[in-house]
Amino acid sequence: MNGKKAAEAAAKRAYFKGQLKKIKKGVKMEIDPNCKMEVDPKTAKYKTAKNKKTYYFCSKNCFEAFMKK
Image (cartoon, rainbow, N blue to C red; front, side):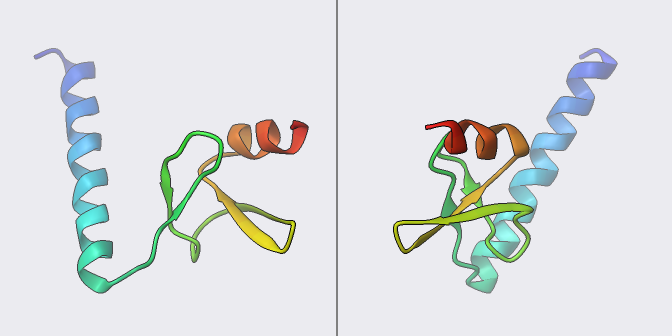
């Protein structure tokens, strides 16, 4: 495995390890309406309210794409 692939694999393991900790703690995750990724509402940097519902986004790109719709 080259250095880039090893780094990607380590990042994925760390991400999933973090997700498991959140699940064990009972953190309710929200779904990004654009890419369908799980987002922690407590740490989400991008969110908006529309039609009396709050939407959470994983990134600025997903937020901007949603706002263009």
